[in-house]
Length: 418
Image 1 (cartoon, rainbow, N blue to C red):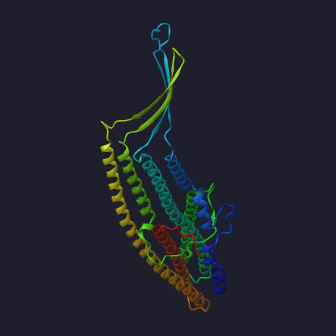
Image 2: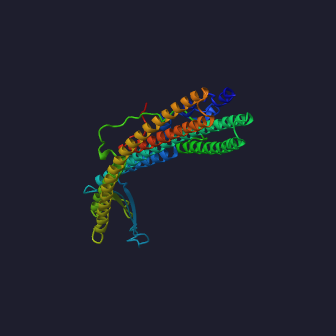
Image 3: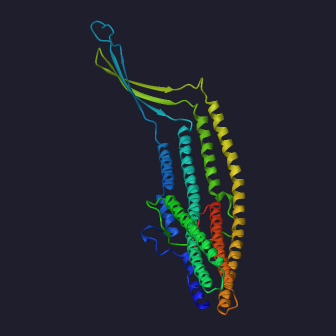
């Protein structure tokens, strides 16, 4: 009888393979590509990244536009219309002129400087967005992988619960166990079915989230590479705070506002225009030439308040930069600590899984030799499932920590891993 029960309980499941491989029942057509490929595709095609690229192109166009010269102006003046003729000769005069305004005092150079610094700020914000996006994509990808692993565990747990039920019924039928064992086994099967349904839903949601984040047209059904077991490169030497994307973006924005101060300071400088034209005399049809110079007079508006406002904006930007520098330092130190902690947690979880695997192996040998009760063997098996669950959780926590560290360092998370 024990051999029959053991044959029901000890079917090979290859759970360690199922945790990291794709379910065979899922469609290959909608599988998410390997993470590195998905990252490169998403940086070019994901809606959030497309928006950032459009902002950079717009800032580049603004910078190019800032180099344009001011347009000339054409003037036509018709004088003495309807004036009485002098001895039968019309007094009408027509003047045609063209005026070219010039920016003096460095106004054009200041405008160009603002455009270039705004372009640099847009590029820094794009890099910041890319780094943050890569970290989020890595976490979402690993979460989808973990949810699939949990789904595999739930399926394994349901299979074991059914095996327990079959074993309990066999023992009850043989008179070696009370009927209570069968009722407990049925309750265990119901709980395992609910857990599997919940795990399947979690996996579906995680894959849908990955699809939406990466800009896929249809939800993914599986992932084709593993981040939970990846070993990304970690910088040994501390990265300078200036390398942080948030610091770079804040510094670029401060520089752009600083350049705007120069524009405001030069705004009061008069706009000078040089005119040249021709004048036709109606009574003789002869022509004469006209030249002129125009300039605005800064009598009422010298833009003092505009200058003060620009200076205060720079002061606010500098304060934000100082705050972001401090925050970036704290974030990186926290990320380093978190990575070290998760490495220890993963090592402990892996050790616990190995111990649970060995306990199950010894329990099975003990049951075969008649030294281990059936219920004790089932408890050991459930402990093995829990240990593997803890390993998945530890691996996912490690991915989150590594993604946070990559973001703090200004690197694309898991861009290069082995």
